[in-house]
Length: 444
Ligand code: SF4
Image (cartoon, rainbow, N blue to C red):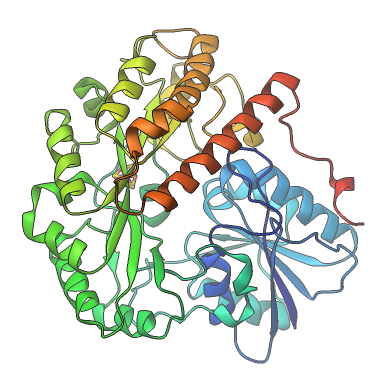
């Protein structure tokens, strides 16, 4: 069969890629391609880099979507199905709401694809396609396939080498989709298999696409030790929780193995907020010390903060930005609390009748889609806008980064790029046209 696997493009200026170059390739799709038996021909279509041709003939189109991308995924699915092409949907959003997704597809893969995908292909060839494919138990990460990087236009990604070492997270924050998708298990690949994959990569910089690379410190220690032993030195970045800063050996090994940056969810400066969302790994009193330790080891930090939690009032924006500036975070991502489908947060807000918007295309963490408790929705949106503008003002970038910092040129480029995206976001917000493009914008 001729199969196209599609990653829909973002149409929010904060997150969309440049048409010439995207940051990361779709690791999920090249992994799926590697699970596909060799008699099938697979094409990867990353819509952020290429226009889709709905008249191209495929036996099967597979589309993976997070919540904000679901409306675009459904448009693409509908356009292919109108022309008689079979479509399967999967990923975070279709897994959370399979009954919604099946209205736009011939089949939905719920949860992780290992096993389900191969069964689906066999059923399709035998004319026995079912509507839903679910796994009975979570797949082991032993002997995982090696992603089909040969199917990518490598030169069109800033960081083409992405690798997954773990799935899930040992924590279960109420606003996060990770535990809902991967279950409450934290699974990891055998270290030697990760190392073997890394050894074959071409690039010098690797992004470990994990939700929490230090979720199991013993595993992380083994992984970092082996990375440091590689004859070819690599640099890497990933997402991790703050427990790394409480473990001196883990921190030292991370730095020695080439860690140059971590995306860390601080989420809130309020212990009551953290308790309410179940982020027990974060201790606000430790934040400053933790940041200092990471910086002392040469590890840059992109801090993530959420606005609109129940303890937040209108003072939260200034306090948070000041904290991020004083501690010289190299980058920050401010997000508006967003009740993603399937999360405990959504259930709670639904019970309280506080969800005001069910248009998934607005679930970009940059727009208010619920009724905040201690401020108006307008105050929350304006505070969010202000925080980005202030943090990425030229004066703020200059004070945070200076010129002496390690990797100053890269960090300046990163900050200026985010600043440009945010300015574009504000222009579109003011013009009131942040909706998704109509399907006619894609090539028919
Ligand atoms: S620690 Fe991070 S990845 Fe883990 S559940 Fe919380 S928000 Fe999600």
